[in-house]
Image 1 (cartoon, one colour):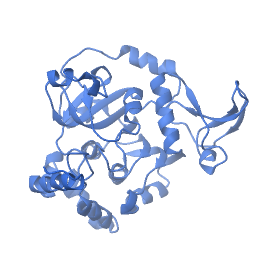
Image 2 (cartoon, rainbow, N blue to C red):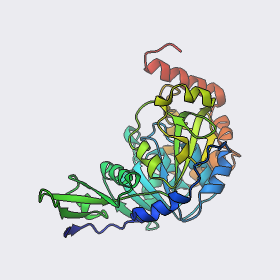
Image 3 (cartoon, helix red, strand yellow):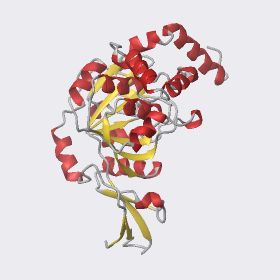
Image 4 (cartoon, rainbow, N blue to C red):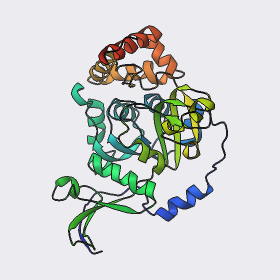
Length: 330
């Protein structure tokens, strides 16, 4: 197909499906115990320079614990898929762990306002940005999960988002209609937080999925963090509920309240007071540095972070709030 237009944004990952296939061909499909600590999972699977994918939607079912651990281990020069990024981007920006980003939605924490930390980091010149829509990034992940180098779509054409993306425009060979072609996106490593998983990596979650299924299938290495481990027999008894199968998962980390201070559907509501505190601390660089030391760098693990911010009493309050909002009685 003849290229009619081309965005000037960079493409950070190789869209060649055969290159990805070579990787997946060597990946083990053995059904084995994949449980490990989150610390070990980040040490093992996240390397400086990798391209990182983060699951969830906004502050909903976001693998916050994984973001903390990546920052705590001071990973650097990562690529990052800013798909529906809110607090996760805020954390990763605070640690300055990424230096290139495919940006669709970020900087904002939705109705909570803008993250000064994320904004300053993007404006610092230390980050190379390629712009996309949320839908475009979903389609890019879909392309990778299908094993094709690109997929066509009809949005973005005629917009500045297209101009600053890595997409190209071409006429459809069947209809002659102009289409935007977006390249496959296959992260080196991704983290997805779920409600339940077994030791092999079979995972299931509740609530909105957005692009997590596509992200799971597109990622070369996939780390599942879960609220709780459940027996394999429980998973096997209802196989239709498994959204992510074991053979694409590389590690399983049990991290209760691993989406805090965000929302976990039917588990706990977001801690709006703590998110507001994050936003407020960002305004003062010295106060924010102290805040980060107290809440990430000086914490041995995510449980220590929870203990510093209300512990189980606070988690129970957020759990009650989630059930009250859903009109249920715990």
